[in-house]
View (cartoon, rainbow, N blue to C red):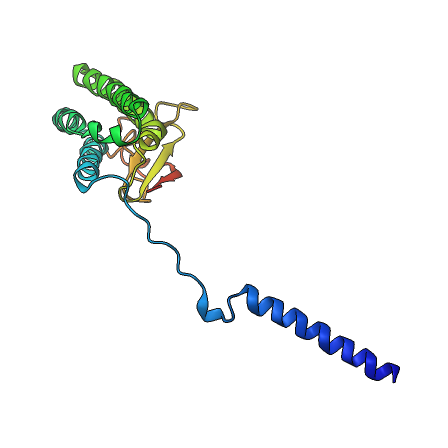
Length: 204
């Protein structure tokens, strides 16, 4: 009799556990709720203006890979124009503080871009490009709540000599170094792929 009661208790406990799990999971593994669709916070026009600015930055980067100072300045001028065209006023939907922070961030980026235009030495130009990058990441991307395509923050540990590193932003995980480039006076093109991906920049 005791064995029968023991088996009955085990059956009842097993049934209770099954029922609890069944109810907790909504009765079926097929009833899992789908993840909500991510909604864009900004308008297409705003995101397009940011994307164009980033493409302008990437064009400057590519010019430095080629050690083409004339092209780097030409692309920097375009970059400044694209930077100025970002529709910051749309951020008023958040708060006035966000708008002012975005304007301040853009002003810092712009200041270093203007400084780049005044340089004649490619090393000094690359130093300004480094500062442009540092002004963009992470502050600018966080302030505007970036919603564009995935980007990569990449780093060269010896961009300006031993232990003097610098970052740049790329739309590819492949390392193509704008600081040492294809025509470095000492390394030639041997250090073109020197560096590593430090972080990814993606929609929040």
